[in-house]
Length: 192
Image (cartoon, rainbow, N blue to C red; front, side):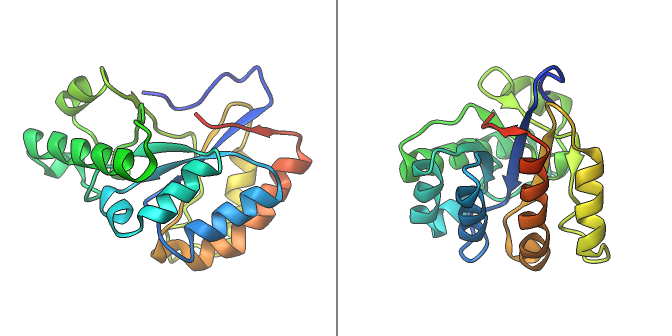
């Protein structure tokens, strides 16, 4: 599993899970474009099915795309075959909407069994994170989310945000300031 990249280079890997979602993903795209930054979007297949043009827009902007299962499944609660079929179904939606096949997979909730990992990892780089914003936590103030994200960011960090409806308010409050911090700190943002 990949938790971070090399600590030797001033590079950062922004990631966004759960989209594409209108009103949130496009906001993220606009903020990244303003600063000429790149990110990787771990997309849910059913959201791609609902919003294929938004998925295509992410790809056309030069961002990376990763597989996040079709139904946002918790690997600990799924039979093996059903989980693998859901991953494959997401891959098909990514290909249909963007014309691209992804080599990256992130398990929803970070939960994946050893057997799932063994069968998925020959075809995908399984990507985790070393900085989690907590933007999904309704009990965490946006200021706290921003503070924690900035505090833990360092060379090679894989930073996790979410572009979904539940995080819309927080991401809109936090992301511009965080991206400004990234820029002022001299990080280069890269796709995985």
